[in-house]
Length: 173
Image (tube, rainbow, N blue to C red; front, side, top):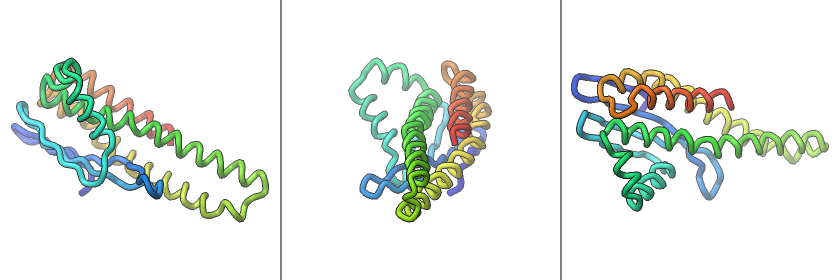
């Protein structure tokens, strides 16, 4: 499903995509996060593997203080979840940058023929992450509407923070 934010009286539905590196192959796949949120309920569903969600779930399970501050409202929990998923994109971006650097160094060293496959793989990964990031920006820039409707503590600040993360990711690509 295409990323979107649908806001209706009493609820909102959010679809977001995030890049996820496949452990065995190193390929970048798209994980989909579907969210249904009301003033009292947050329901999430994931298609694919979204490691940041697993990490956050584990941290919340073991850290009572974090759980108490994160789960103040469904909107706060959603904001924390999205922020965690966005922040976890930065190591992937650093990995892509390193791959580009490796390709550049190999080309300059005259090993062009052996690097063609690697170069095509890196190019495809960058295109995949750019597509995901572009779609994220559209949805996250509308997050202010959601914060006004279902806002928790620091609602506008949270929406601004998510938009800034999205912009930083886009600029790094």
